[in-house]
Length: 348
Image (cartoon, rainbow, N blue to C red; front, side, top):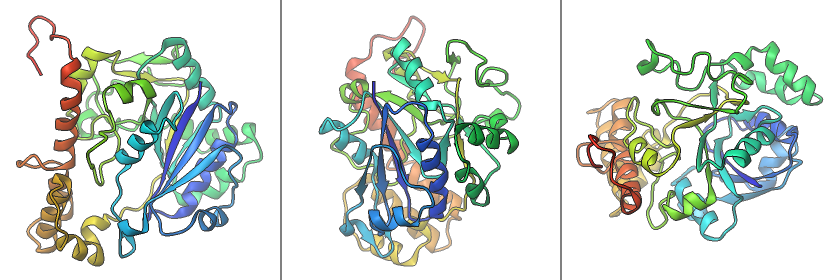
């Protein structure tokens, strides 16, 4: 069994964050994985690798955003299209997972998660993303550890092993934490836990077969600036019910963790003068870009604040936001396969 790990290298965060990810991948106890670096920078592969203090010692390749997709210093990116292309060309492992450059793994994550998948054959396994208090200032310490034991000790010393699940601090979960006592490494001998419902976004592993059968990464459509999560709207997951009717969902991996480093944010699609100037003059029929153009116009004119403009680009009354489109397009491909709902449950 082979796991394809797609690691996005974005143009906003500090590049040295990537050192923690690369180091944790170098230390994996299993080599049954490959890495696809999705390069959203104008830097070359050689320039990026030369800037790192760690050298990848695993199978990897780079896929670069085309130069023509850059408007000034920043690109139009579509990570759904990358996934769809890899699947269409049969250039992906049995399972795939998408990570950001600021996320890194326990040293036996690959071995443990593949064992769980091999024994249970889940189509979708939520990956157990943990929110840490660490930032770029901790990367050198993490990346300079000499081996697996030292790396693991470092995680314990920094308190990362006890980091809460990614969604636990969200507003919806302030009074209810469904993960408490159920997501600690080793707590569940099975390697996974089932929850009654999907509460929050998480990284996820998906089988190549499931992704292809249901066109999960929406080949034939563009989802600019939309990340590949099952759901992103806080407290809302419209795809959970249809997924539950098609497969075992939601199932959360519980033996090992993916850790998230803190970082600054810059929403260049709304905040960068050159990018938004190009966007304003760009003729398009793409719903996601139409929504983004309007969001940028409202933000640049002062009619909406940054966060409200972001929300408009993702979900709006016109149904053109990326999360509106995310649901509508997924349902287009899921609906023909859905069995009738259980008695007493409304149709989707």
